[in-house]
Amino acid sequence: MYELRSARFLAQEMREKILVPGDTAVDATLGNGYDACDLARLVGPSGHVYGFDIQEKAIHSTRERLTSAGLQDRCTLILSGHEHMREYVSPGVSLIAFNLGWLPGGDKQITTCWETTHAALESALMLLKPGGVCTVCVYPGHDEGSRERDELIRFLSLLRPQQYNVLEQRFLNAGTGAPECLVIQKQLALSSCAGT
Ligand SMILES: C[S@@+](CC[C@H](N)C(=O)[O-])C[C@H]1O[C@@H](n2cnc3c(N)ncnc32)[C@H](O)[C@@H]1O
Image 1 (cartoon, rainbow, N blue to C red):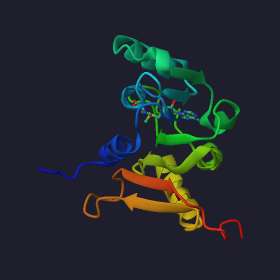
Image 2 (cartoon, rainbow, N blue to C red):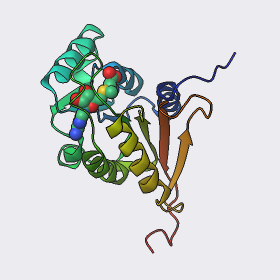
Image 3 (cartoon, rainbow, N blue to C red):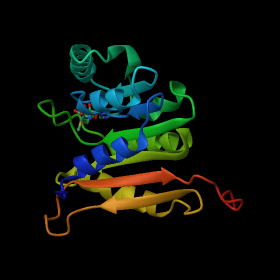
Image 4 (cartoon, helix red, strand yellow):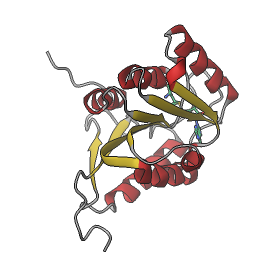
């Protein structure tokens, strides 16, 4: 039986639908490496995952997780902000995952913030191949998360429908701080008036 579950699960379901062996994916916020492992499994041995985090601790725990799952050879882990994504990744990416906020079990002062998330999203949208998807899980239950969520909605609402479809998933009855998942898909066939 299908069960409606939290934002993270929608992001997970989405990547399972989109990714096929041989694809390139990006984990924009490695954290403890759960998402990276998932992506690496889905792209298979012929695919590749690029992962970013600004904390050494996150790179380390992701590397450990990938190594114990035998998935490390198909991943490149980069100790750098996702706002520099374009310097490391070439266009043609199938899926880019953002799981915003702080490292679970880590320093809550080190959290994603809108200015760098915005720059990273601009790059991510450029790097996606037609039909490619970007998922963004956002946690508005704290001050920066709430600001990030509001700015995200503003930014994504202005994307041209000829170029992207944007979906917002949130539980209406879960209170104001409940996690949300945003899904952006680059249109398969860009309309000829897309650039106007
Ligand atoms: C909620 S955690 C990610 C959870 C992770 N995807 C997992 O599977 O465990 C958010 C991560 O974003 C990282 N982060 C914060 N600012 C960043 C930035 N500018 N670029 C890349 N990562 C950043 C934090 O260090 C933290 O590890």
